[in-house]
Length: 258
Image 1 (cartoon, rainbow, N blue to C red):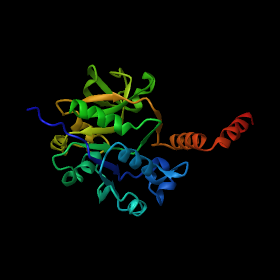
Image 2: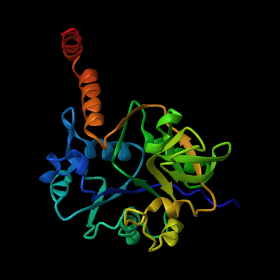
Image 3: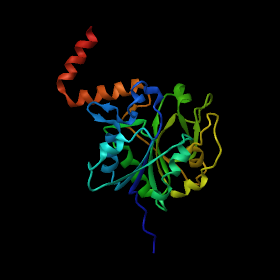
Image 4: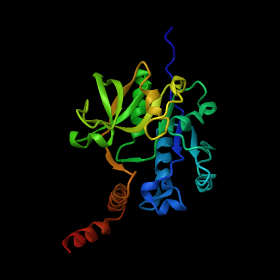
């Protein structure tokens, strides 16, 4: 009898970063709670995760981000949201390991909340791909080759199968697909997180992902916003307001004419 296929019911969201590019706001508030129009970024992501079918969410925060717990308290009674603190900023590898007891032996969705996709649910795309192929899969987005040095770039193999990710290649990028920092991973990835620090003194989860024997990518095609910087937040808020408030379109036209 064929084994039943695994489904994704768990998500880990890494929110312990310092948000230095969004200073001075992030001196007192988490970057993840910056509003996109009138809704905090993290709430938009959590709602997309729930819409994709996830039932349990584990959020890794830092010591200064307890307002995240207060914000979500009682908001989704049918969803289990739990938290843990990353006290040492040693990278995304150790941050993911904090969720080890939550992950157990289950495949899981791993999210860096630096990207927002509108008009497409990126988490559902990944979960659907995993359900069909039962293989770790990451999201990608087509970019111009000349900006590949800013991203982790997909190393293609055959079809949607890939060799892994190369971080910010300075020359000769292997493709024009950027990894967007959202993955569905098998729990074995935790076995590959090693105490090897990169040039910035951090242990990166991408190094562990690259050791997985099977890895795929799926291209996202929605409206993508890079929320790791002020421009991305401004663009996301402008777009969300444009879609939500018809009068805003006329105001924008008048502003452009000035």
